[in-house]
Image (cartoon, rainbow, N blue to C red):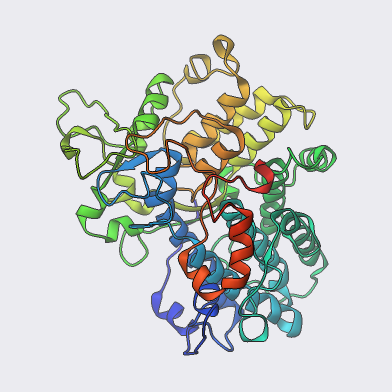
Length: 480
């Protein structure tokens, strides 16, 4: 694991004062600089996005994925997604950092000495754009991110176009790799808190993202040839030492945010009954790495709560339920901001093999993913784990469900990934929540935030109409 110390005084050099109006207040960064060294801005984009999405992953993504549940301030947990409370509004995180990343990209193409930043900026653009559109569906993209030099009321682009068109997700990954391979100058990449300036690692990152997102759209597009080539070449993230992550520290201001907030905020989140059932049924020892025995237990047992209680009418004793482990508060030095990992890539390839998208041994890839995921979460893999209930195709199990369940377990706090993968595959099977505010339907997209209707009304109206008045129950393109 990479150990990195972040200095807020350096980060503060990034910002100068500027003014924006209307749409820019949400879809651009009002504090972005007019001129700044790309090394400082690259560091800021990576850290700000990773830190914010890790927090969002804990307080919102984990609720949708049913890794954990909220005891109070839990309208989001009850699927009132248009009423974010402690989290649940990632829109400005994406647009702020995509706008700042666009500054890096523009500088790399106009200032010769900054050319080294072009490839990483294109790869980051693809990464963040994919996260954005996978959550919301159609979003402003091709006209966005340019602030005063572009439209402040950009149109919403179709998700299919964002994935497949020129300058879209897959194209930018290819162009990012090409820019790195074409770079021959000696000026190093600075401000890189993911890979410490290692350009070959950025290529592996891009290829890992291609594996992930080709699989994501595989029900819509024939991706077999591209996926097979990626697998055969093997130039993607394969070990935890190569992961696209940065470590949180164990002290403020760079510890995980839940370690910095008051204890009441942390204590609002407990183990979900869904997560408990899956981990216990698999005899999965990661339960002790991710959660604590509940306080009233006399034998170090764990207890989860069904998601989505009506806090106004249900009395819950905190001591009866399992809180998140010390890794999320007292000792966050073991915790990462996770962009993509070796275990995620192995599980994606295992699924591709199991679906006959690629020619490969799905069981070997699945076992590799499990081993890497246990290692990532600092848990010793029991000698019999892959011979028991978690064994590939054990006792007539559905291999696809097994692969997705293992990926889901490891995706704790990784943004909204567990929920996105559930939407795509239906695995693992989530439970009907206790007091749903969405007619007992598990949502399949995030709603556009209220600010969009106010600041970009004409274009928002078109997108809202295409999603049944901005409904959270209308699937995105790759999930239709």
